[in-house]
Image (cartoon, rainbow, N blue to C red; front, side, top):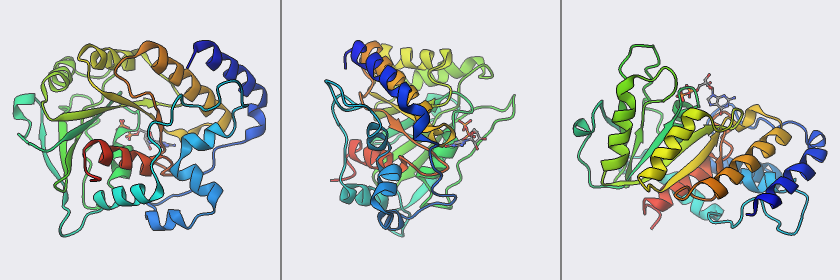
Length: 285
Ligand code: GDP
């Protein structure tokens, strides 16, 4: 997407933003996907395809479409299939596996792995809890007290893949944190994709930039997930999405060109993110 085109769109959009109102709350508890499918079409789009919903509010110009190409636009059937991968059953065990402070303490696994990184308070544990909402016994451990050792936490999702919750970075991160994350990102052989969480209210911070530079330097395939989308008005959220999209298009090489806006409170975007994870780990086959 050309930078001029994005700026033009932001300008046009801001003129109409106040009329769009606030982003609605849809759920306070975990929704089963079968319930989501019963929602009226408009609400269903809001929950399942938040980017499409935002796109509706763009004034069409010479290059319509919020995202340059709809690279990942799964059907409801695929999303439902991915839901079953994230649902615990006797044959599909989803469980906390172990924690590690150093890469050589990490479990040695063959199955594909995805990791979640982001600055402290970005909403990482809330999002991982939302991803595991159909596995209620899985405890997403949080150690936020200053001085507590920050660990990488490994979760096994059936025979499909491992999900790793990396320690949050930021001004309170211990010195050895960067070494831990850096070693993991650089050397973990079965790491298929890194999900880099950015707070949609705050935008890309200098701490996020360090993580982005790390991913770029190691030529990792990574994906930007925009958290807490329920907190802003639709107008503000769209402005943020367009700005971050412009950053991805112009400043990154390894970042997947499609953003994933999510809310751990309303579950907006969570189903499509599950489907993406299932897809890139080969679990949908
Ligand atoms: P972490 O430090 O990255 O693990 O962040 P947490 O998941 O603990 O979230 C930090 C704060 O943001 C908590 O107060 C959460 O309740 C809040 N939060 C997380 N995700 C969301 C979200 O999607 N919407 C809203 N409104 N608040 C959120």
